[in-house]
Image (cartoon, rainbow, N blue to C red; front, side):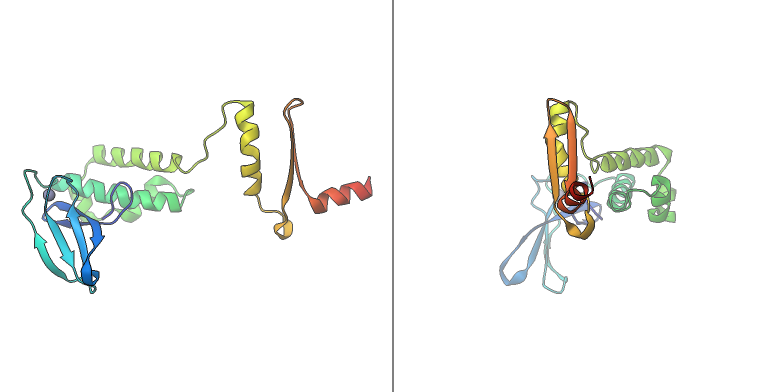
Length: 179
Ligand SMILES: [Zn+2]
């Protein structure tokens, strides 16, 4: 499964482990996601578990329902940012398993929908609140537009008149010679 920040997690007996570091001989150490806990897993280069400490210091495992919700929510979050135009319900349907359906209820699904909305909104550019902010954003936005033949854009902003012009050199010369 994946964390909220979309990093890979491993789950053992309801406890989550995150990748911690690479040790000598390329051994991977995974630590419990509870930062005050000393539990860990170690894997060799073939992904075989070679050592562990599964004694968790004074904390309980996640509830099954909470784990299932996190797993589904975070896998859906990965998909929605890759497929920005797809309906959230369609993505949830493609990711949810019959087992998940037995455990989750409508409250969980609503929470997942909210997470999808937040994940999607974070992908959209922040809209400018003032004209000055808008003028400052124009070069970046125009640079992302694809011009014919990959030509560079020429941008002219007149703050006083409130005019923004952008063109490519090719179009500029065409206009000059035809006018
Ligand atoms: Zn732990």
